[in-house]
Image 1 (spheres, each protein chain N blue to C red):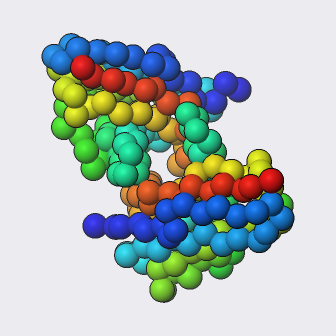
Image 2 (image 1 turned 180 degrees about the horizontal axis):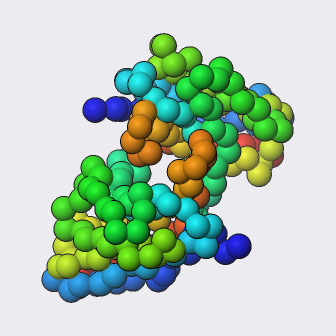
Length: 112
Length: 113
């Protein structure tokens, strides 16, 4: 059974800092890995999707990397802003299943 | 496009009552799914569907029924609500035509007393 772990569970940084969120998974037979953002009381918003054949994806100040063989992904946020405060969720899609297995998330607070 | 819509936003039930959580999408997505989100547990898959007339169980299906009579709608039924079903429920959809993310609805917050 696939297990996804996110470290740290919570992170507080001053505005302007660069930061890294970590995600690890136990089964390397994945189709893709996705990063989502969740604001309090809201649904999930997709940030980045990395297919299993890719090493990284970038969108604006966000960069996600994938090392499938070691079962790890990182989400790098550059020049953090208070508006980045949210919970960030990592999820992997199993090969051939379409099903997502989620980590428990990292709650990020960016202090002005 | 409205995307994925869910109704109601909030619901309070008494133990033993039944209800249906509604989910609809207007993106012509083949795949639809239901998740529950609980503190400390993350999101867990309840049921999913790869097209009209086809449904299957996820990780935590007990106590829930689903059906998919149209591409657009995927209702989740609680037959006899229990306090353990107190949670936030999310519906999601995606196309199967290409690698794609899942698009999530805003959620339904359910409390069972």
